[in-house]
Amino acid sequence: MRSGFTTGSCAAAAAKAAALMLLTGGVKERIRIDTPKGVGFETTLLGIERRADSVKCGVMKDGGDDPDVTTGAIVYARVSYGDGDDGEVAIDGGEGVGRVTKPGLDQPEGAAAINSVPRAMIAKEVREVMTLLDYHGALNVEISVPGGAELARSTFNPRFGIAGGVSILGTSGVVEPMSVQAILDTIRVELRQNRALGRTKIVVVPGNYGLEFIKERFSYDPDRATKCSNFIGDTIDMAAELGITELLLCGHLGKLIKTSGGIMNTHSGAGDCRMELMASTAIRAGASLESARRILDCVATEAAYDVVCEEGLGAAFTLRMMERIDFYLKKRAAGRLAIECVVFTKTHGIIGQTPGAAAMMKRIVEASV
Image (tube, rainbow, N blue to C red; front, side):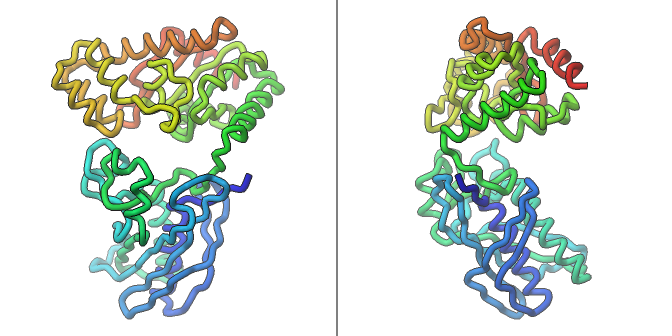
């Protein structure tokens, strides 16, 4: 299946091209950037508008074979001169880019819904142009997506507290096709490769956050881990079939809270009861009814966990959460392999782990040396 490129890649490419045209006075028809994944992205520029103090141009989003409402939309960047002389790159959203209205998301309340990795990509590309052309002033970058407000109605943005448009997203810059069978086949290949290399003890993570965490927290080579996406239950089954004897699942609270309710496919389309599970677990830990209501109103699990911590119940909450996660993971494994779990958040680091997780991780790390 064909891969595509994220709205973040489109925004960064458009911003780079607009900066080049503004600072050189020339015209660009195509532009190339390197994505965080290391894959080059070369694209045609659309809708070029040149003024004395700004340049605007767009890039059409191509999501490959992944079904995405933003495929076909044009992501524009307008680059204009700023007031400073310190090389600052100020990034904001314009028409069709949502605004954050609730806490707990990637960006603070009031900010444009341009996530941190796309912001870093945009800033990097624009600063490279500034350095190349020996420009030491400031530049403003405004990202817009005409029609974004209408597109956002078909996304989870309204529910998550992002108003007025789509989000500019992406952690790798590349959109991987989301065929279920293709993903399951990829997981099986990774597991089989581990087994072929003689590894019977493995680390499984849902996605990029987990890969980054195991590298930073455990100094574990992320290339040795298996990404399971949303398919936790299927991954456990395949690992057992292939002769894996020990499996450590390490993931963000936002994904793994679902397993405390026995949900083994964590895709939001299959079921999203994160806040209900957070609230019920908090009540079991002794939280007040008012705190439970506040949790149910949260849009992100990190914000919900902060509510729990405000009552001084962080330890009690995670104890009960990990008891349920441990129960359901071992139920799915059914004695076919040993399984443990580590749950983390970006703010707090590790917040909970099953009783045998630390010892299993130690064995896995030692086996990798």
